[in-house]
Length: 338
Image (cartoon, rainbow, N blue to C red; front, side, top):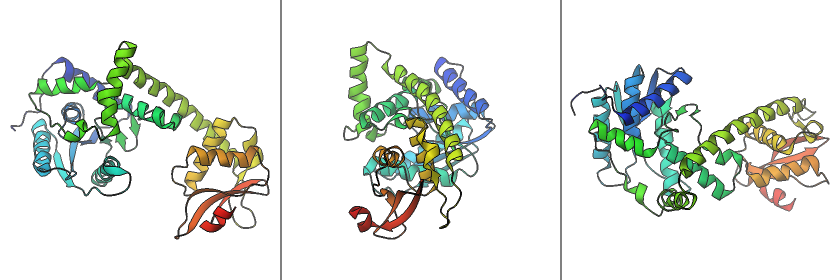
């Protein structure tokens, strides 16, 4: 592709540029990376970023999941240079790990992006439609506010300037650029839950409710994110006040008395923050409620398991002793017996 960094003054491109401009200004970012797949969303984002930022580096992740993936990645890198990126790096990854193909590919992609970005934030091409799908997934899983508030515009180092832009707009932007975006066959594969939400559930909801569902879900996510941020700030303050001095064993605990009078939503968030700092990985709602029982419904119950220990057969548990919550690693059989 010949070098042509200038963008036409057309409606869809203008909308994408305004979204990127607003994000860069809000987060004082002038040098950025862009995760470029060659699809419409990331291609439109890349073109707009080059027009609005001082320096743009494209990172193209080749998942190797289909024949010809290296050629697809090379074409995406070619597009990045044609638009004016100062660099376009193709990174090949091996997709392995738990959680199925979709989760494993996502984990491999984010690792590769993080390794390649240097000190720069990485812009991702998630759109309003992706946000709506994320909210629906969270609702279906019953995983609470933290899930249904969707994706953040900036979750360092990940930036999402297009959360207010429709997917159809990025496609029109590519048309206006004269670029034919790559169509990933996985995005039409009904084996993936998100694809069925996109192609079946959301269109049905739009029909039943008379349109506007995706935008309404995205607005809901933004409102809940504001609420969640306020609750998280209150939880951090509560945890700071509840932090107990080290006991004779050297354990830094949490004062149950301070926790007891706090609203339950704030209390559970404070416990979650404490657990993450103690090495627990994403404690679930069941564990948090069991720990909450140690605080407000104490009747001498045993420890609550919240994660694996450093050695096989051990678990990280939370227990209540002498008016404080503390953590320790125990033998897994002991935890089961308790």
